Amino acid sequence: MPRTKKPVEIYSKTGLPFRPDMELVINAQKGDEKSYVELWDKFFLLRQKEKFEFINWCKQHHIENAVYQDYVDSWDADAWEKFRNQMPGIRIDELKEKGYTNDNWGITIRLKGYFDVVNRSYSNNILKKLNNEVPNVRFYDKDDDEGVSVLDNISRDEDILKGYAKKILKTSYSRMLADLNMKQRQVVTLKEKDSSVSAIVRELGIKRKEATDALEYAKTRLEYWVEKSSKEEGVPMTYRDMVEYF
Image 1 (spheres, rainbow, N blue to C red):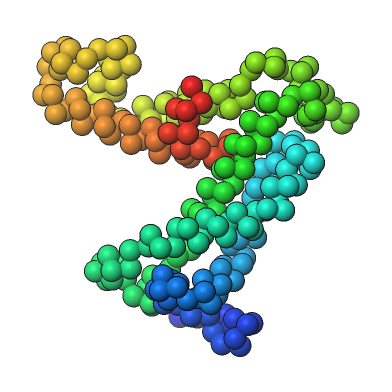
Image 2 (tube, one colour):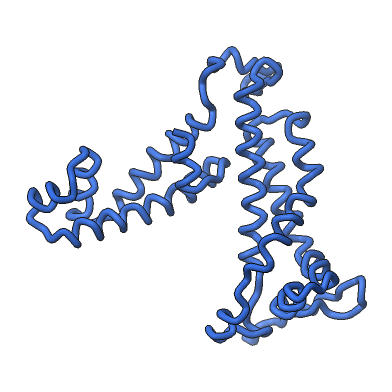
């Protein structure tokens, strides 16, 4: 069965079809402001989706509207700034060398990454705010419509972000171990016991490169699972973000 062609999107400001992503990026990098704006407008639906994902995250975590509304109001401005700042870094020449053209290259995934950074920054800021201003904030329990004070549940000194990070690390570490073979798990287990690489090599009777390769692979899998697990928790963070909370 033939594939249905995607309808041509018309840019309301020009009455013409939107130009290809690569063409718009090239022109924007040359300083063409209209190309920046057209590319921004072209992905209006993606921007709205990302903004609503932030709002849904707040609702899922029972954050009061008064806490997150300012972030919603400034979302487009901050996303625009991230969009503008990142655009010059797109290496068009490298893309062309790899065979990408106007017809087969798009910026959707990259833009989603930019907007995800905005959402992650907002969610982290909100959690820090809740931790620092606990007397003025109320959480809502699913079984209690009246709500309970944060002070009823956590001490003033407790770090909310650190709690999330610990949970995410525990989940991610288990998932990472499941990705390793038996020898790799042995290397990682010994390293977690503060064994040196030299000691691991002697104990397991393996080459040093085998040990270092196993540790490097384990780290990449842990980084992957931290990002995936944190998104599932509604608190997107990278491995580096998580480490900072400790």
